[in-house]
Image 1: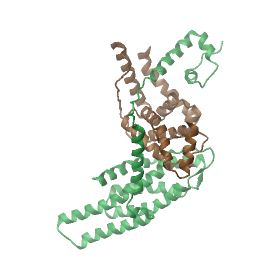
Image 2: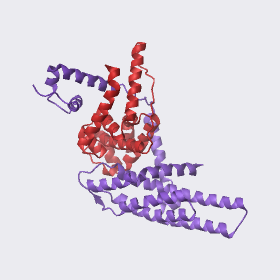
Image 3: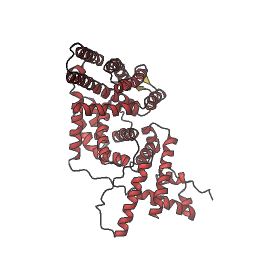
Image 4: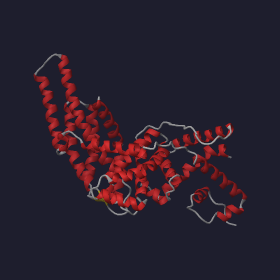
Length: 236
Length: 178
């Protein structure tokens, strides 16, 4: 008689990924009891209820997906230009607003209002920048391991463009004393640099290395959380 | 289904954005079920469905018809769920649903409810990878090789994630179902 199957073999057998233990289970009382116990547990998992969706669910999903597409497409005119150009324009606006506030010294409430406007202008621009960065990072973080080479030339080019704007936004954040934004953009920069300097076609190993850069620094999470906060602030 | 998926994918790749709607119609419920089993939370599952279809559209140029479109889409959904799990501090989210079916006796109903509660709790305590691997194997019937490829890990790692998940479920549920 063969040795008793292991628990792992029982699991594989349950899922149809192991053969050759059926006759043992038939003839061995101990193993049959053990397998039946496993079977009862795994059968009970099927009772995990999934809420029903309404009859118009597909319609609702399609509408939401379409709306999110439109939100991504309908951007302010300056974000449609090269990202670094938009960032440069933003730098000029924020720095001008900063100096204007110093030259025309007014009553304190007006200065506070100036600062509010500067921060808001920066946040709108940074929100868009983070959304684009998140898309690039998520794309690389979620692509399955390729069997051969994977073409990442699109992400590479996008990272190169984002790198320029990232530097400018970081300087802008620094100039306006926004430490949190400056620190996030500072963390994002080396990751964008790594992607921008990757070969256009990467092997599974190279993709893994890029992914671990993204994961080790937790940058995707930071960008998501910060981006959500910025979007919430901007919608107020 | 697979043939019509291929036709729709080819049309989308050729620039017909409306053809994507057919894919959303065919797969949104399945993606929701997967996402719900991965997260145990209805709102998160809804978000994952949307994010999955957005990502799939953006990555469609990478889709090769070696795997079925559904399998490829579920892979994206599983990764969206993992992303969500990673982006959150773990906290137990047990969402219990009313059981609308049949009229079993009160004892059986209570026992069934207890099993579902314990099951939801245990699934929530699994690591992201354990839960993803287990859900893909148990509910979606994906072979271990495919799960490994979906999660970007080795077959041995995928297999061990499933074993660990089963062990934890066994420890939690065996006293209730024997």
